[in-house]
Length: 334
Image (tube, rainbow, N blue to C red):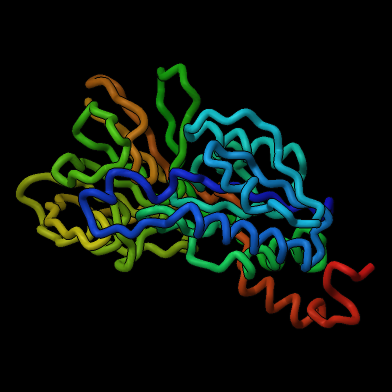
């Protein structure tokens, strides 16, 4: 173990168009700064010997660690103000061999991390809009868990679990294959715009790695007709069209609509789904790749997502091992 913890914060998470068309709340910069600061302090307290924070155009990470007399570094990757920053930061954390990576953002942010570092040992803190993959957790708990795992005080293999993803193969497309951590959608539009999918009338197909009736956004379409758990070995396919089953779904926070569903099918791991036709592929709720009329995409749900660290189980393991005893644990211990 290197003893290193990484922190990546997306300053744009939770600030998309869904703030204007739904009742979504705003996650302030101040809240993110406070979460990062607590996470850094807790990581060192729990045994991390080095904390790397990724620079961002709003300087949230830099402001969070100002004045801390701790082994923390702001990594010097160039920033562009786009999702490329998150992917580049994940690659850098991989190269630096961090033992646990804390990410602040939404589903899209976690996807960008997975693109850069497919096997990232991840603690994802929810600060986005329609959060399904990351969870709401305080930075103190997240940082403590990250420090315990990165330092080797808690065996990562005992408290981590491989997550699912939707792998997308695009035959004939010169760009690399793609992925979603929660859901892939085919929408009947070629307009990227703000990227977020908020018009349910454009939805044609949804392939979900996991979805519950409690989720909001595109995954709620699957979650309300064929729920599939985060750790269930499979996914679900939903095709939409006129004349089908009419279902009310929360397409955004506090914004309900009716969708018509013509097909629902459970998917085994590795079972291919072919999507064809002109439109746009949306990954984890964000439109990203246009499709021509003759193009096709082949989607499969597989077990190749990041390694998700269970924060509660990690803290329980730390308590059981006595790492919180003042005579044994803490940053001043040998």
